Length: 70
Image (cartoon, rainbow, N blue to C red; front, side):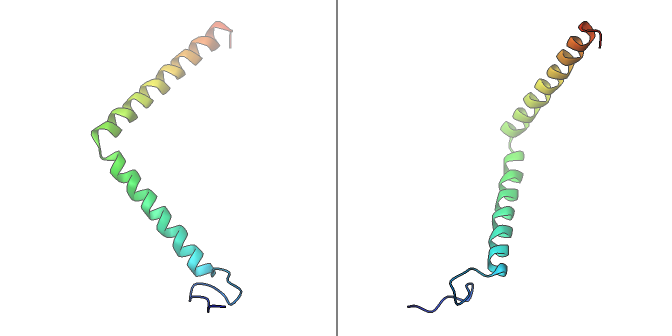
């Protein structure tokens, strides 16, 4: 049987530090991807479309509430 690496216990279980480092690395990669996506003109257009839809939904909901007497 081979010797476990420094990131694993003798039973072959990953150490807490190893798992934490992997999670932090993935979170940092995801954050970086989000920042890059947000920096593009397409992302700005998409965010504007989403805001416009949310506003239209809010207005429609208020209209429905008024029509129901609420």
